[in-house]
Amino acid sequence: MGSSNKKLIRDDGKRMDGRELDELRPIAIKARVLNNADGSALVVWGNNKIIAGVYGPRECIPRHDQSLYRARVRARYNMAPFCSLEEHGRSGPSRRSQELSKVISEAFENVVIAETFPKTAIDIYIDVLQSDGGTRCAALTAAAVALADAGIPCKDMVAAVAVGKLNGQIVLDLSKDEDNFGQSDNPMAFSARTGEILLFQMDGLLTKEEVAHGIEMAKIASAKIHELQVEALKGAYDSEHKTKLELNIEPQKI
Amino acid sequence: MEIQKELNHEIVKNILKQGKRIDGRQKYEYRSIELERDCIPNAEGSAICRMGKTQVLAAIKVDLATPFPDRPDEGVFSTGAEFTPIGAPHFEPGPPRVEAIELARVVDRGIRSSEMIDLKSLALEGQEKVKALYLDLWILDYDGNLFDAATLASVAALQNTRMPKIEDGKIIRGEYEGNLDIKTIVTSCTFAKLDESFLLDPNFAEETGADGLLTVAVTPEYMCAGQKSGKAGFTQKDILELVDISFNKGKELRAILGQ
Image (cartoon, rainbow over all chains, first blue to last red; front, side):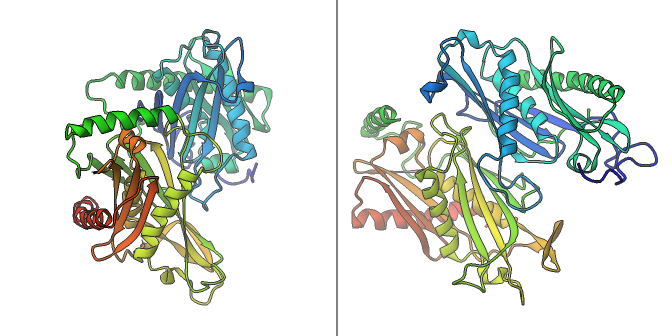
């Protein structure tokens, strides 16, 4: 957590990028953007550009990963070395990306009806092509659409969003600068139908009341994101739909 | 993969005996090609090339780096390729496999030998550090002919690479001072050899079913990179013919690149 003295909320009560405290960044979701993956989705979320591809159920390799009882649900969150505005990154898993892969996998283990496919693997691959804060939430949101596009039987859709604290105020969907200089970051994912929280992480300092306020704010926003996910999936069946990755799609204000 | 190769070999060869390609193309005809530029604004240059169902993203990051000891007055140019597991069912996570290394090296050779980037111009007057261009090739959908798709995406990305502003030996991120200067345009043509036939721009079935591949990269004047891969042998005459076709096809490809 960086310095919390930096001014992140303007005198008119809006954030530096002009958003209200409970306003999401513009988001666009497109399902089925790739030919090879069984299911795929692109999420453009503010300046984030994230692609998810799903393969499976398929043979689980290595064999010692297999379960006799259910399919393995394995998510891999990966940042491209060119994704940040800063210097060229290293490829391969970092400690951070391994942790995120774990918690994202576990969120999907809750919703995928894995008992139907013993000894198989359902692989969810996520590449962050451009990052600007909130990538794990956008990644999880993309992966949920890709899973549905792949026709993997699921109990529910999942949508994720973060809340945080800037200059003492609880705000929705932190950008990179807000995350770097804010006082708290609290990403979470909601099961759309049940409202259960399937991913929950938090850092910084929050009072009990602030935690409650944040969860409520995130829950309302996740319902809006869920609507976009459903629209994206319908779009894949539109007669105008073309299976191609167009990264320059314009995200819509929500 | 092994079984797929055998099957594809039979299928592609049998159709070829009737004088046809599996997708109905002529022997020296490309699939539809689309370029989308500036798709990763955080990178200094970027482009996606869609060639049929193959989709390759090329992105360029500009940094400051220590020059190679044997070339202290030249900037650094480095190419990497990632066969992200999203791109094909047989791509696995982990360190780059030999195919990814080969792709990165062949694309790198074409760009480097053509001198389309003047590496000397990337040196910084009176400073130890030089500018470094890192080219990453991201294979998002593999349906054959990564060499040509990656070369096109890379050249398109280089064509619109913005050079970041440098002050007191540091890069000011998000501020730019003009575009990277491009001296010439590289294009490549990849041919699959099947028996005595050659097929330009092989798709997945043709590439995996082929006896071998030949890639020829050219500028308008010179051949600048070549790679034979697979077990097939090529005759002297074959190679000269394919080089000739590559020079001709170069015009078509440069038109797609707006040159």
